[in-house]
Image 1 (cartoon, rainbow, N blue to C red):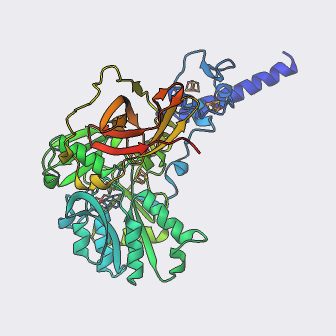
Image 2 (spheres, rainbow, N blue to C red):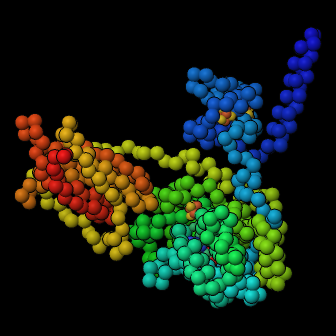
Image 3 (tube, protein in one colour):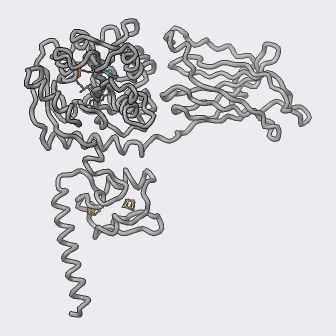
Length: 497
Ligand SMILES: Cc1cc2nc3c(=O)[nH]c(=O)nc-3n(C[C@H](O)[C@H](O)[C@H](O)COP(=O)(O)OP(=O)(O)OC[C@H]3O[C@@H](n4cnc5c(N)ncnc54)[C@H](O)[C@@H]3O)c2cc1C
Ligand code: SF4
Ligand code: SF4
Ligand code: SF4
């Protein structure tokens, strides 16, 4: 055996030792080669560093495809996943720093049956009773429009109890916070989703932060865990069509990938949907969100990781920990220590959220259909039933439309942008030339799904005579089955100057 061979063997046994050690350490984790391929390679965020292939005996670098290739039996140990520079595996990266974790539930009889364990409401009750706060910012249901969230300033325990429960839509909480400060409240508990908390955190800590300058205002940030929220007008219009009476709904709840709707919280839900079914109603901003657990809050509260009617709670700051412990000591809450099993469920969901932005849906196929052959010269088609459109929808601008004439190709380019924060399904764009009250040369373009803020361009061939464009009037209409006619405008075309 040469000296080199001895070194090789030593290195090999050291390598084997490390590999076996890490393999053992990662046992039971779900991260593996399959996830590496799904999350990192197929989404196009792989840097082609080759680390995964370098650390594993059954992975090779495929120089042709520019990605790792399995050449033996994978044990699913997850080492490749854990060494990859693009995966997020560190608990602090996944859910931020915290001082203590608890499983908690309310001891206040009126709060039992709230959203989960009633922890948020109980903390507010404790802080009002103890005069630690003079106001709180919460989100309540709009009495005139059921389940539409309205941010409110409250100053009493009774109002905190009235505000319990989750509404799965964006709420303009910061507006209420600034109103509270203008009204001279100086110690305020602020309840919000992670994006709300980020706004307040920035206003408190960034160099130009607005709240930094209200030195006497103390804001305690209570963050709610949040996987996603929905555009209420789109979601509720879908619910209504599916026979749900929103006036009767007393609770909505997201649990284990399902959205449940209750008329009676003590009975089974009247309807349950998978989150996938409701995906198209999701607010577009949530696709870009990576914070599940409100990493910048003083106290973060969610349901994942604890059983029914309980909350998972993280105290992230000293004041947050003191408030939870004192509320428990004074009998408002029951708290138990958080354990590794609870933490694993939170980390798993937190990772899903961190990596979900890698999978943001790309454009789907749309069909351009020339109907000039089949359509009659004058179209008489039934008007879409406008009663389906709720009054708020009537004033909402769904799409913006721009036009441009391509004189060389003799086409009118119409650019349509989805200006609402959710997917527009089966959007039909009808373009027609209008002459003396008659319609001619109708074209219909059907777009299966137009994603939020996405633009598509449609070319409409212009009428010509002897090679010259005939400039006339063109009517552009946009229609969907869900909302009826959402756009209609006649453009008078003219040659470019
Ligand atoms: C949009 C959204 C998505 C969520 N997603 C998840 C999730 O994926 N996983 C998970 O574990 N938990 C999630 N939660 C948190 C969960 O629904 C509970 O709010 C949390 O567990 C606290 O429960 P609780 O019993 O202490 O709440 P309660 O004591 O009932 O108090 C809830 C508080 O939340 C406030 N609130 C209600 N709706 C909003 C809103 N839209 N914006 C700001 N504040 C609001 C209320 O004013 C009330 O003060 C989500 C919450 C929201 C609002
Ligand atoms: S055996 Fe190799 S490819 Fe399979 S999970 Fe472990 S490191 Fe990854
Ligand atoms: S370690 Fe990660 S980034 Fe590097 S090549 Fe493998 S998959 Fe790509
Ligand atoms: S998913 Fe993110 S952006 Fe959407 S409501 Fe929740 S915290 Fe806000």
